[in-house]
Image (cartoon, rainbow, N blue to C red):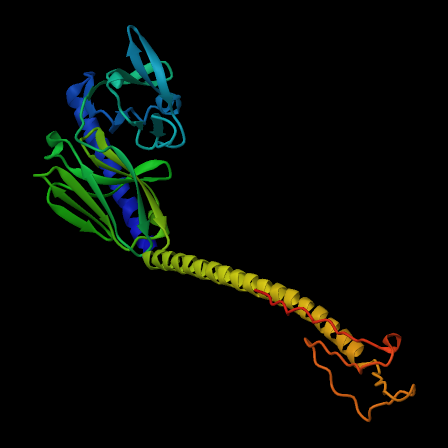
Length: 363
């Protein structure tokens, strides 16, 4: 499919070049040595064609150049290069020796580009062009667009009113040269995946590329084929990306990732808060347990201190102590006094137990 389209495009280009060559020769025959007049607008681009005799071996092999007349001298602005379109340069030219045709491309035109130019072979000029650049603000002259694989790219090109009756072209930069993909003489037309529609009332040319592929990535021009020169009123850098569905999927995945990150952060915060509360609770229990243990130790010591002594009951009649058959349990927080009236104050024993302090609790 692509191979067939490529062959068809190349055949169309060769036919157009041949037709252009004969038309130029015909025009040159009627004009003689008269200078061509070319008009452009600010911000646009123009292709200037200079024809020479390809049968003249010397002229064909001589180095070509393009110069601008300043007073009586012609200052070179560009020489033959491998590519007609070079992104970083406004002036570029190529030499088609098979047709005896020099193509000069001038991009991003300014008023200062107006003047008289000559195409030269070594030091001999063979064609003169009077170039006039007019101030025009109707049109956006360059932009970048993104298209998706298997999608449709739509390019809108506004042009000056004076070009409404001119044939319109959609060009693409192929191997450094401009190739006409499709052209119309008003109305609309479709060629394979490419279509053009000319709205002459609004002065808008709409180009459509269907079933976009990676091969469609590149630089395009909307222009008019005003033989023997061509005016380009818009330059488009088309970037081809992955299919639109995939782009939407990537955006959805990214959105889901943000949600997951947010949920994880919330869980981390909740976990941190829970751990903080747990540590505070453990610390409180530890403090409470230490106080309870100390209090328990005191209680055990007190109990031993209270229960361990043997109380003797002194009788009135003699010095022999009488042991009770069983001891009465002793409780905390109680003061016990066990005494018998002694016969002698010196023989009396007095016992007193102190009251335990109250328990302390952890707030």
